[in-house]
Image (cartoon, rainbow, N blue to C red; front, side, top):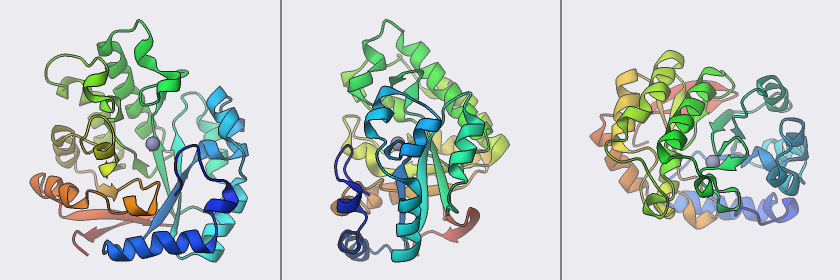
Length: 267
Ligand SMILES: [Zn+2]
């Protein structure tokens, strides 16, 4: 809904800006639009975690956000919420402050370090890439099992840096296993996000092999461009549709008041 680390609440959540997103969506042939602000933009997130990045970012009021989206727009009201191990109850309390349409759960941080953010870069640490990948997918599995979320965001975010960070050699599929098992157990919806096309890796999240695992697990797919600017709405959707078709996905999960339904793709 707004560029990372930019845009005040008033600059972002106003009728004119919503109109810009609406127009862009219409041009991209998208009729139903959801907004899912990152939890760390809200003061209330500090009740869950006091990471220095969150302390710096947490300036807005979650209730003002929810009220704006509900009362002044026709968009679905979502939140992107980090899974913080050990803080599940506090996270649940935070999620329940608003009546949301959907909650996207994500893993960016492993401990205090991030897989996708150079200011808190996990990759400068002495840890082996194997250990980082293993821990990333185990944490993703725990996020699915937590029951806090409707959708699992950008499921293979750990690849975000592409060749500019170390990666384990060989077939990455062996790392997916705990996450795919958790997805099978919980039937959580899994996001296919074109945001990765804009990142150093230049690939959709998740990789085709991960998506095939999700389909084999029988879990539903949700589609996102993770747009932080109007011109990013629907970004790369043609490539996403190709990927989905290749995996045999013909319906997508959509959410209203945290109830999930499946809609045929291409509508
Ligand atoms: Zn994210």
